[in-house]
Image (tube, rainbow over all chains, first blue to last red; front, side, top):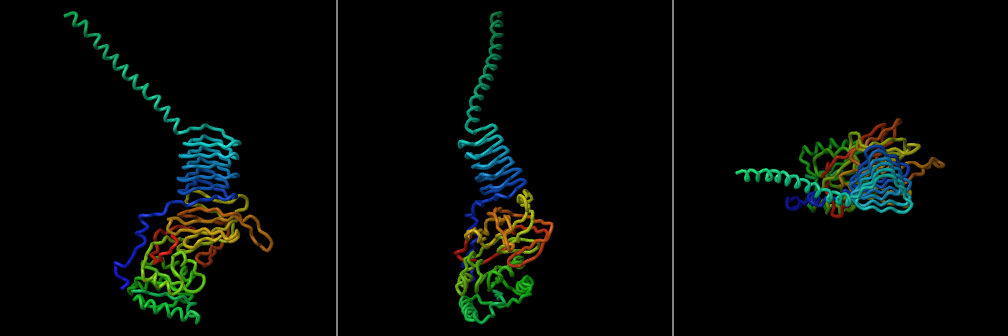
Length: 165
Length: 255
């Protein structure tokens, strides 16, 4: 009586729709050393040292005392340790007073606490767009002027013909 | 057809009345079946394979965490549904699966709420609940992408959790709950800070790495404990077998 197909409930079907998020946290302890392409889908907390590359689709937290010698890319980041390498942050980058960063920074929102040491270029997304919009109209106008001149040259040559007739 | 695998310890007199109650309940639900008693050297994989040939569709383990781990370490190959009736002490896996201890487990079994679980795979056998490498000088490579080591002495302890939550008892019993459906295993690495008197070790706070494949290497043999079974290895490869195990779970499962 309990083995009828209608009574059988497959919980795996229920889970297909509501798949759990990849919120797995990776923690690198204070005395741990990570070498290579270090990437995670969840957030990363670094207390030790990392060399190579660091990638996460989530938040990166580098605590005070941490040492990162790597190119970093993350959704958002909070840096309180030492970083040597470029930082590409899609969203917000918070730099604490204890942080030391040697490398270029690219982010959307930036906050720097007093005491932080930085060396490198800073690029922010909003400013890049403004530069592009200013440049484009100039190119268009140059193109139009050239066309007018060629048209004018043709029209200039026609009147004398008319006059000769 | 249902097959019931009874652990050896169940034959103790104190479990007589409980087992009778369970059997009555199973008969009432119409899911009673053949009973097989596991001996210390029973080859569970062979046993279950033979029963599948005879028409078994559901294999129910009656015992505790050790019974569950022992049967599953080899039987996860078998394409049947597994059920679990937890009896006696040391039943933490049942809690994760949402199965009540004792007679109430029969209700869960009769409802047949099924899920496919991820299981760990280490050197040609499965581990269901956890894998533990005792403190040793080891190097760990994750998913062939990065290598983890410790500064100075390379002595560390490694725990890989699949079903059972990992309990950090040294620091006030902080519990990490691991979800077996997350598509990844979780490794906890605890470097040894210093060794105190009487070889008592002081550990640093753990590092956590979710992974799909991991290689643990050492120059000297290290002790590996998987589902309560100890072996000595020099190199182990731990990976995840996704959705390998068909198991009947309770409504209150923790994943």
